[in-house]
Each structure stands twice: as C-alpha cells, then as structure tokens.
Length: 315
Image 1: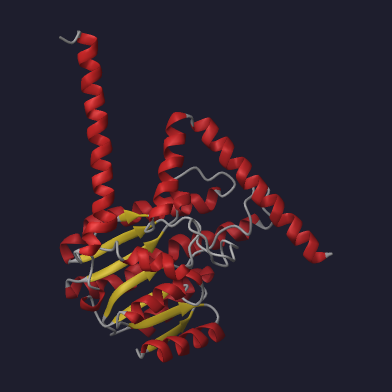
Image 2 (image 1 turned 45 degrees about the horizontal axis):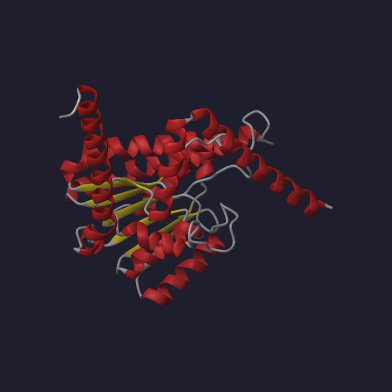
C-alpha cells in the first residue's frame, strides 16, 4: 500500500508523463504525420496569385520560388527595381509562371500603400507572405545603438506597419472568396529572451499576437493565418554565409515551413529551431536570470565581432 505522500508522488509523475507524451505525440503529428497525409493547405486552390514582400533576397525570394514551383503566379514587392527585375526573370524562366513586380520601400510608411493597392487591384490573390523585415545591424543596448532612432523607426515600419497595411489591402478579396492564406514572418526572438535586440524582439511579439488573433477572427471566412517564427537562417540579415543544420538555407527552411501551413498556426516551421526554443524556454523557466545572462553574453560576443569586422574594413 502507498502512503498518502507516495500517492501524491505517483499522481504527479503520472501527470508529468502524460504531458510529455502529449507533447511528443503532438510534435510527431504536426511535423510528420499531418504533412504525410496532405492535411496541410493546397496553395493552388487558394487563388491565382501569391504576394510576397521583401521578395528579392533570403526567405522572401525562397517563398516566391517555392510558391511559383507549386504553380502560383507571384507578385514580388521590394525596394530595389534592379533586384526585382532579376528575380522575376529568374522565376519566369525556371517555373513558367506570371510574375509582377512592385517597387516599394516600406520604411517610407503610409506613402507606399496607395501605390501597392493600385497595383494589386482586381487580382485574384490567394496567398500573402508578409516577409519584409529589418533587424539591428548588430546586437546592441537600446540607448547605445548608432543611429538608433532611425533603425527603430524602420524596424517598426517594416516589421509591424507593413504587415498591417498589406493585410488590409489583400484580405478583403480573400473574405469575398472565402479562401486564402496569410503567412506572417515572426522570429524566435519574439518567443525567447532577446536582450540587445529589444526593439526587434518586441516587434516580432506584435507579429505573433496579431497573427493569433487575426486567425481567430477570420477562420470562419476560410482564411488560414499562420505566424512563422524562424531562428537563424543563412541569409544576408543573419550574416550567416554557410548553411548548417541549425541555420538552414532559405530554400530548405521554406520547404519545411510550407508543409506546416494549415496544420500549425504558430510554429518555427523548422524542427531544429523548435528544439532550440524548447531548450531556451526550459532554461528560462528554471532560472530566468541565468537565461538572460547567457543570451546577453552571446549577444555581446556577436557585437564585438561585428565591430571588429567593421573597424577592419574601414582601416
């Protein structure tokens, strides 16, 4: 016979075991079983066009290519006309789809959206990827970042205002058609401690919260809203040149992430990134002070390397 204290221990262990088993089963289902049975979104059925912001480099270009490969015509929105033209020609040649380009600098704020709305008028847009975003040139303390006011303004315009405005432009048509997909690109920085990237991390928290509530509001209209929260990907923004298992190429990340659309509303989109977030969140729950200390030290090292590289380039 168990003592009362032993009975309590058995109950606690049973609850813990159940929670762990449920988490493992959910992860296996989301990552492997659901995609294997094609329970994710059929993008081709959403509409003729996919709109991708920040579409000339990194994740944006990879999303545009992946959606074109699925047979969708694509609209590329970015600020550099020469890059837009080069990427659009590449996509036309490789995937034999229609491509439209819209030149727009999202840091300019409200002035760009009338032009974008005019260019998109009347198009059957089934997919919107709000990818455009900015981060710090390197990690730094809030009051110490060089030209911080401009950097913070541009981050807010690109990471928050652009997403809101693009949803306002594109989603009315999706509501009318009772179908559509909106993918908002957040970041693991919004899910874990992000000292020395405070404004960037906070902007990505906005993306996550907005996406969750938008999904709840418009699910009844047949619109799937997903927030992707990637960790490091080998892009110009991350300054990682060589892909690794933990920092995949943009193409590898997007291939993984698109399989989760319609299955998970909020996900890193890439299993190794989910593992990393899980480890850091566990560490934070055990000792928040240690988690913040460790990440701050890591960010200070990244800053030091960036400053040394910049000084070497100048000299």
